[in-house]
Length: 308
Image (cartoon, rainbow, N blue to C red):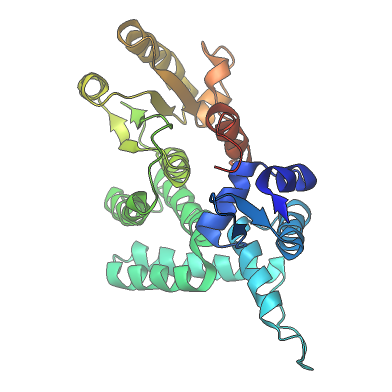
């Protein structure tokens, strides 16, 4: 039997990640001591090692890896039949693309009920992470590109973006809030109408237990300061796609810091990533969402007691 600290050291997985895999994805079920501390069996460790291999070597996300693990373990030891085949990655990519095409076509023609039905079916088939990151996010990107290229009207872009955004919001209340994490305000400043990256990062923060007040795209500055005063915000997330908005954002940050020097910032989007003279490069978050987990573990989880 191994403690969570021992397993983390053996496998090179953060303890907070092990807890998240257990609580959110039911990856393994360790035993508990009388004091409530986790104790992992050899089988638990082998399963966790297998999950890590799928993520590191085959680029699977954790929800897909857990699903594959359960399929593997569902085969009875005395069964002579072959184990169920897990669809290879190219097949899964094709399935995700087909689902995205069907949902996009429904939204393009204002068929909201059909689109929602397809989305519900997709969650059942592919799971939470796959649907968001491999189906719905590409649809949002495609919608924005179609609007900019004139292939979608303003009404179509608003309808499609709003419906998918609502599906994102539905998941905000499903995750527990941890009091040691900062209360977050997420917004795109005035003039920025693309909010895909902001939605993803906000959902990431909620999944990790932070309370998020999501204001969305094109937020006027006068509406921000009352929220900062009344809601005890500790972290402000700003996202822009245009480098031309970097300077106004820097000025907004300075005005916020003048009144609230304790507030920290996360800056994201291609606008900040491509900026050559951003005033606060230390706050710019990498575009790759795989780096976000390392950031939040480093910033907010490293002081948690072992076994908690």
